Image (cartoon, rainbow, N blue to C red):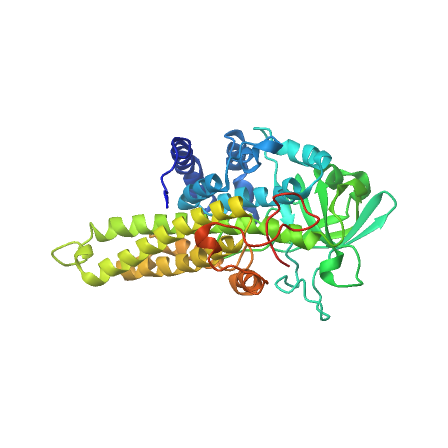
Length: 438
């Protein structure tokens, strides 16, 4: 039974390069943006840093090789995410959601759509942003409920060779673009009818810079308001609005009935990467706490690591970090080799909730000094508290996805351990499409 978590030489090199980039580029950028007074200014201040992400190939690596990118495996992305989140959270969120915005395209798009919509992100220049427009101003945890709930209120109406969009999104990261004029690519989840079950009416429309800048759409897209957040202080998830916004019909990525499945599949890969980000945050918190308790005596004769209570906090922190890391790697491998999504959701839930607890334990190990703003624990906690809430809330979305898996006929609870798929391929979707449920 070969179980080996040893990184390949290529992965060791990837890890080292990602760490160097994070230390030399992301960490200094965070120091600067935290000095700025508003969410928008902080977000826009990261634009040059994002350009470095593009130039160094960190965006291109999110696109699979068969579509022109350099991505070899989802484990590779998890390695990068951990290194990035260990130095910052906001800029890695922008990096993560660009990949999320492109995922529906390379997962489900036609060859023509992949060629057109992925092309700007295969370059190593510029500051192209992608986003996935899912979350609604009224909330989205119950967007498939078929008992009279509001659900998705962004509507797409086909008129000849065009699609007319009305509605809007909120919390969709980077969906406003750098100047609140729209991102380079927006994968927008819409309802194509207000009649029938939500699942049967949902589809995806791709909006590009060309449509955002078109004369016919001037005034048809707006950012209604920005949102100041406790954590992820330089990310952006504003309230957006579309009013008779026109897009060519060829930009329909998924027609009515396919959108919900594509949406869930895209958010499945990102779930595992949140686990990796949580491991990175915990790693940073542990390193700072370890340095403190092995050097500070706090009025005693020996460093506080020698006291059992302090050591116990540190031990718990390290176990949470390590367990999250290896669960995430396993989740990525399991997802790619079997198509089964259970562990990806577990990695998100387990990692995000343990990150909150690990930061609390770090603060308890340090004591009241941890509450000093000169210490990083407030920033750690603000970011950690967001992890269980964003990218599909643990309570309303991720645990419900696991619940759905458990309820499927033929579910094999040993599949995660054996690494054998138990479900059937999703009918009507591309070969290798993930085993997700809506």
